[in-house]
Picture 1: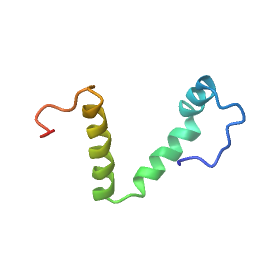
Picture 2 (picture 1 turned 90 degrees about the horizontal axis):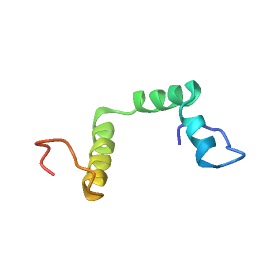
Picture 3 (picture 1 turned 45 degrees about the vertical axis):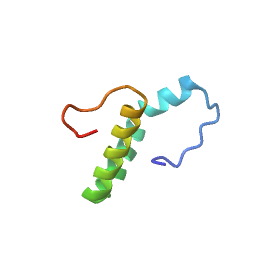
Picture 4 (picture 1 turned 180 degrees about the vertical axis):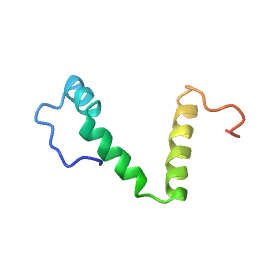
Length: 64
């Protein structure tokens, strides 16, 4: 998790508003800035594989 905040009303609208807030974006940026390059690439690869598996496509020429 990026934020140490408890959403009292966990609805799609509240989650969307939270995720678009400046504090959340700052926490996400700090989280990824603290990771090493190999860990970040591993996360990107996993997300890309999930998109390809879901049929949403990947990046051209990425080998998937």
